[in-house]
Image (cartoon, chains in turn green, red):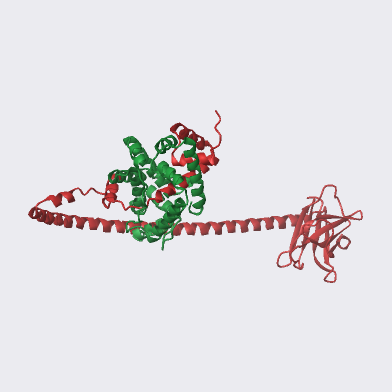
Length: 217
Length: 284
């Protein structure tokens, strides 16, 4: 995704460079320009300012993802808190070699939210009745770096455009799978469609999505 | 049971979490030991994670950051602030004065601590700078030492060679010939010492023209009418050359010697011709 393409800072661009700066020169403005990996390296070194910068950068995404899955602002807030606390307590769980930070963070957020939904046993009732949600306008805390924000906007436009090219039935199964946390069988039951049809729609949808988002991955 | 590689479709289903738990677990276990499948799964997860952007961003509640910081243990709890808001106006005003005084009292030692920390940081930074400077000096000294050591070895080698050549000159078993320059009208420019005692041959000469790149001097000896190469050498920038060679087995004597100019890396005679002649008969 585009928002962790190592945006450039005026003085320090990496963790090592920033550590080389005398104390006092490494301010919040600098940290807002650090790459995700550099901030995570600083979090591993127990840098509270880096943790705060990561929160500012991703709180909106984490909260929104949790809210989209859980449909409950209070539960979404609790989940977002849990994700960031886990990030601070076990930053080594993120392994840069396995992929980008944003991917990892959104994956664990979504998985945690889905677990919560399943634990509460509310999923089936809600998903069947669920209506198509209108995309929300993008908004973000003022602390977020404008370059980062612009990249998120670009990514969002690309994802929405890619989804818009899918037939509604393919888009629907992808949403039920990702945000609803439903299995093949559960989607099949919820939509009253044969299992094979559901599988085909998922595979075709992901195939098109992958092709459309090639340059953002 | 052997597990087949994960297909792209299965990777997508895995990333979306639509597989039944048993299948999800089997794929995850397989990916632990199969890099190819792991890469495919990670890529599928990247695509799936982008779906999180589709609904749009909602700003988190402003209080969430404070909650996160407190829960992570990196921020002090400020539970007293809401309590203050619940006090009556007079009590709140009194509490505010008390708090202000307390805060002022707390700020003074805190500022002193910050100043101390800044000074300490300055001292540490200075020590780090000093240590880095010393490290640079040590590296420079090490380089100089290595250079001096190399020069010493070279000088020692030269002295050893001089000593051995002197022994060869003094040995009654040695033959010494004058090296004559063809280019300079047969002027003597050096010596060729055939040391049968040490079984070595010394060639020493000066005023040798500096050869262009790709050319080298080659020493030949004539044995029974046939020239045999004893190796190549080069002159230094002043035109001086000293070439020492152990005599090949079976080579007990020679009739004459020549030095030719040859092309580097091309054994045999290729060069422009004989350059120097060592005439044994002159000094034997």
